[in-house]
Amino acid sequence: DAGVTQSPTHLIKTRGQHVTLRCSPISGHKSVSWYQQVLGQGPQFIFQYYEKEERGRGNFPDRFSARQFPNYSSELNVNALLLGDSALYLCASSTGTFAYEQYFGPGTRLTVT
Amino acid sequence: GQSLEQPSEVTAVEGAIVQINCTYQTSGFYGLSWYQQHDGGAPTFLSYNALDGLEETGRFSSFLSRSDSYGYLLLQELQMKDSASYFCAWGEGYQKVTFGTGTKLQVIP
Image (cartoon, rainbow over all chains, first blue to last red):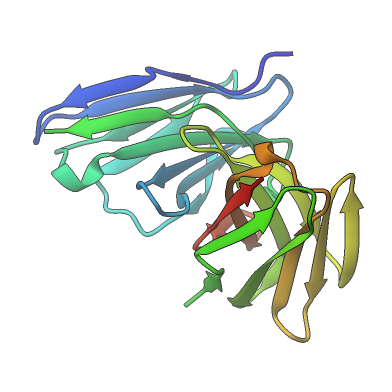
């Protein structure tokens, strides 16, 4: 069975640009969560979506937005990129709203110059 | 606010047993999870404790004490491949998951 997939793998953007990251959950998983991980730190929660509705939001500015599609795939959008947005962006899927057991994708490495 | 504190680094010998601690200050606690992350890789789910006590999964065990706001991950028969970062995590309100500060485990021959 395919695991969580994310695209692109790597991305280089310039300050002020916007970016869209994509995630496909494990088949049968209805919940997708997004995390930002800076080198040397733990993942920081950004959003959780379940059944196409936002169920949780972390302490990130409004420049960050996301959505979930009918097939449960998801997009994370970041506008007006800052240098500090450079990080590994992880997507995780789980079966339900209680995300104590999550399965992570390989992540998208975003570099903002 | 919520926080989960872990030792930053731990070194242990191959074949030995190591314990990685996690202390937390949270509200609305719903249980403690543990994840492993190798350098350059994604976190991998290891175990979850909803209730006090010990959960065993092969060489890995996890313990939770709600009264002490404390948990730990126990790794037995350490192997070189266990060298990785380990994170405790908890779910707030079933949706928001907070990860701990992480412990980098180095296994030496």
